Image (tube, rainbow, N blue to C red; front, side, top):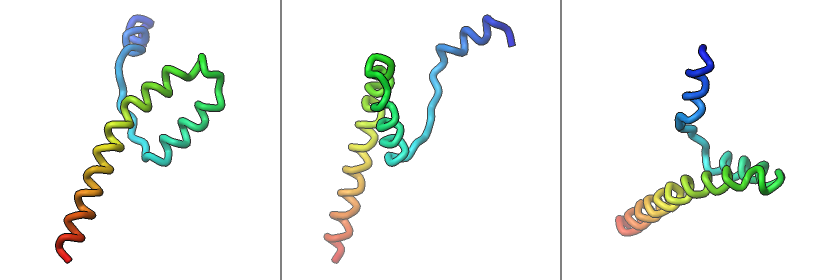
Length: 71
């Protein structure tokens, strides 16, 4: 692969799927590193994960309420 292609690939976004448990474990590992080196990564993870977890929480609460209403 050419250096030009490698350079361009560095700016491509990728999507990774982690469970909440794995994400928290990753954040804990990052939290043990020097802040200046990992702050951007931690902020990016929290910014992306926060809304997803909140939506999942709302969905689960709605399902739980619907199940209680059925009984």
